[in-house]
Image (cartoon, rainbow, N blue to C red):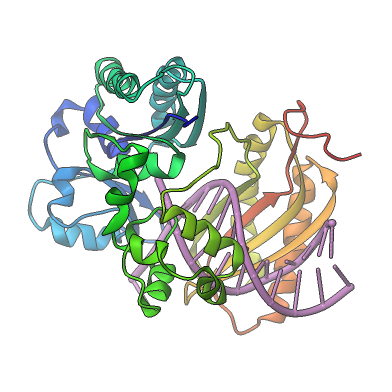
Length: 359
DNA sequence: CCTCCACTCTC
DNA sequence: CCGTTTAGTGGAGG
């Protein structure tokens, strides 16, 4: 018995939401930015709507470059307003819940739905996908792209196939052809590094990957990753749609100026820790591991961590981070930091959603 | 089997 | 002269 899985992707979500609440900017190129605060226009683009993408502006590029690409055109630049996006997203997720057995939200603008119990044919599944698109358009005024398929990976690949405002169905018997000539870099889970490695092995497309030797892959990519990619290239993915509780919470920020001194860096870390405290409380989470994240001026990431007795005491985090920072700086007197962060992991939940595997 | 850490990926 | 967040993997070491 096959499953019926949907992947719903809200189209350039942040930009769409901004266009919706401000008619002045509707129809214009809109760019949503994360300003780092260290200088005017330092930071990166988070989302660009399709009008802006026509100009070559896209997620990840520096704001400065985006502004150069915009030249003297009428392009709207706005800062991210996550609180508001989360609010809109929450209402949309309610719509998705109505239409599915199980939902797995992967970010504010993306979710997997298992609708196996709600539809008994591909026609019905497609109808549900269409209804979801209509409801979101009607209630919230934004478009989305939906992939309908028989597992999460294929649903994701299907939703990517046509956007914005797409609806793509890929049935089991169509999967092979759908993937066949796709460059490996297009497969979800394969980034630049892995694509380069595969290309070096003479593997260019999904079918190359599907027909390659697993043993060969394992030499270059390791056992687990190889098997996963090898299966995906064949359209195989048995992972369930399941709501997840966070395994870790982290905050990263950019220092006002590069520094290698505790007195400069620690206040920033305390600021991040303070922000994390609220999140921890809201989630009713306890942590065991505290990690200092240090990104140097070469953009190389270093981490130092410490695992302690389970607690939710945020003051403990400050103490541990101070310790880790001093150790790190002492060991690396030559390194100058650009960004720093804190991560809490080894989480368990007090309201007992996930705990009790121990003892 | 656990911990630490670098690395890869995603949005 | 470039952000933030999360999950996963593998190797080294204990």
